[in-house]
Image 1 (cartoon, one colour):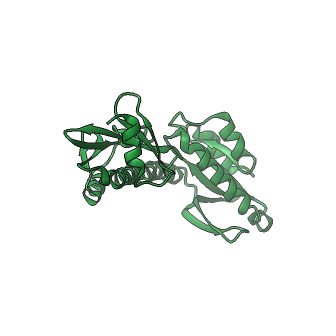
Image 2 (image 1 turned 90 degrees about the horizontal axis):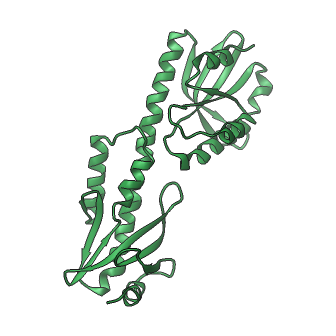
Length: 259
């Protein structure tokens, strides 16, 4: 069966949102409407083999996860979560690839969809890995504040003018100033825009707090141990909050104590 015939067979049981075309090397590529957490499109591949078909991601899910998780290794729990995804959806996980075998043309559409769902669920593990990374940096910041004897509260929730509640990573209080600190930490360049825009939105929504507390300041603390931040990221957040870099704790301390 050539690529045109194979695409026609796959298309019989899938909505038109699924686009099929010849793959660069072998088989066909099915571009799905499903997305990775950063908005990238999930592709799966269908190959004829052994009188049936193999549907695979060619390692894209794990590859994507690695590129989003610089410096953070997958924990045993996350390995178990990957195994659970595969067992739940009946997926084979070998050599870093998610694969699924099917014997009949009538099952191709359902098999493609199930494999794509597995890719999405595996890539969603990025959120748990990012949480670990942020938590580790937050622990370091908390320890540093204790060493500097700067009183602080962690994980403070405040309602904005919109009614939405925002979680502030740290609130510090010194005689001269109260600071609300938003920690920005990621190893993923594609995630940067989403993080900075959320911090900006939070600062704008909470700006009414300054009316009742003149010495209140907002600080965006960038974990710049990962080389993902650019000047435009700092400039975006700086419109609503003072920018501090975790690699420059002396400057961060000056902001906390500024009168």
